[in-house]
Image 1 (tube, rainbow, N blue to C red):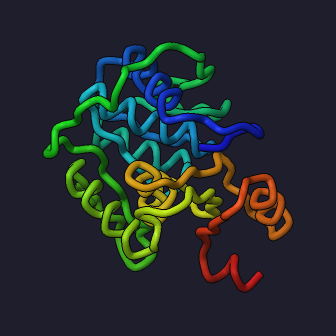
Image 2: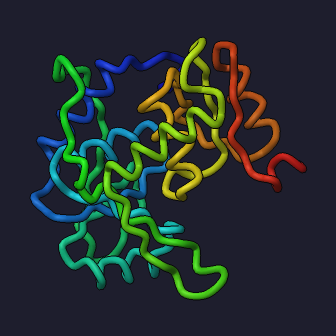
Length: 216
């Protein structure tokens, strides 16, 4: 990953994820609302390492979080800003301390329920989509191959889509797990922000965006 002007190695990522997993509350589900893409990735991995499931809502509205808490009473909120959601137990992944992590990537069971992703509900009620780790990993490898990223030189990626959405999760969180891709922690919005985020990265660069952003 790239964050705050520096590259983060695989070893450092594994150390952060492992350390965070040891600190997480003993629950079954975590509502991962982290807006910093690297915080989200560390939280996503840590939740799996703790044998828990990430809940990925379509937005950060208090009503959406309350509805999730109603459906998953044991869920806590994993959040990297100062927003407070009433009656929810909060856990802040910050600060990410430099520490010694595992020598190799930990094993996660193929059938572990890594995430439940919720659709936006724009075409009806929001639907919960269960995503076992093996499904996500297989999809990431297919996406990396289809995007021409499975091998070759390391690419440096900026994404405008949030990691809680399936598109953002697949391209900016999971593809870097299986391909030589490093994602920026940023989530730029305006064209100038996107430009600045891209030029801050080494070449070759990759932009993952949406039609509305591309038109702008």
